[in-house]
Image (cartoon, rainbow, N blue to C red; front, side, top):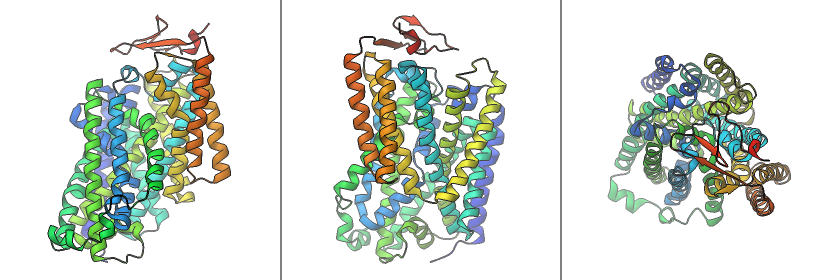
Length: 489
């Protein structure tokens, strides 16, 4: 396998330096907690589309889709396709009342519907989810840098994690947004355009690609029904209710921008997946007996691309990973401050809020690096993350959007019951089992609908376009945002 040259290495190092510089450049934009956490809610359609797409496309999609394509061909479309469909469904959910709230986290919205205890518990679940996904990205960064530079995986994780942490702490969500735009451009040039074209050229052209592709790799069902169902359970609920995705939605300058940008991001994710499938199948044609299919993307990059171009493409892979890593660390810090600290001390100044959130981001980032060094497994961390977000948050949050009146008791009890269920099945069946998600959603739904049916003390939450919240006709204070449960008699 062709190795990376010094020139390729310089390109990737320059890319990481640019990310830190962007963080420094955007620091002047960060004057309030809204600036730091949601980029002042002022991101336009094209910047928003790029940032949302970069947020969703991470190491699991980039490395996972290319590996699946090497093993199963076009059957790999199910991974990225389900992610794309889930994000498109998210664009439809952005027509609901939650999108109009002037809030900083999904857990804060959870509290408005279901009360302060539900807000705290949902915040803890959100933090577990985002933290574990962040660990996944640190592991993926380490894998990429290990392949490129030959450094140990541990050193690679440490360097990659520190770079991400640096621009987050300096510039907050403004830095995350602008670095994501830069990363989006790198991903488009490297993964969607250059690598597929050069890979097809490397196998002798499009005609040769069609003729030489193994017949098994042209079967869209090759992945198997069980795996497809597992992907649906794993990704769809999490994408619809995850803080990382909603926090991006809150950065849009208006709900219309959020809806359109999210739909366009879904299309981009699908195209990105198609490009990875082409790359994976081309690699099968020239290297049918690859020793480690998990390195399919890196192997294809070094096999099909010339010096310089492969540096750009590996920078694109790092861009996909780092954009998601920054979203998860930023999201975890936001929830910790907004729903746990500021919720108890609402009179903190903007300067204090930014400083505290920065400190939390540093702690979260360092813990993510430590856990990545310890776990070193993408699959385990992902399974744990989505078990909690899908099994616990999905049902009560989705039906808060859809129901005219909600029961605070139903939301809290369903969240608590599903949390206990997920923990039990993680211990019983293992961290990689699908049963925690399945039974978590089931228990959550059963408790939610039973309590909703018998609870006579429901309340109606209305949100105006300017973000003003009314609970049972009573206007909520914008700064204090009294919870829905506090309105109950």
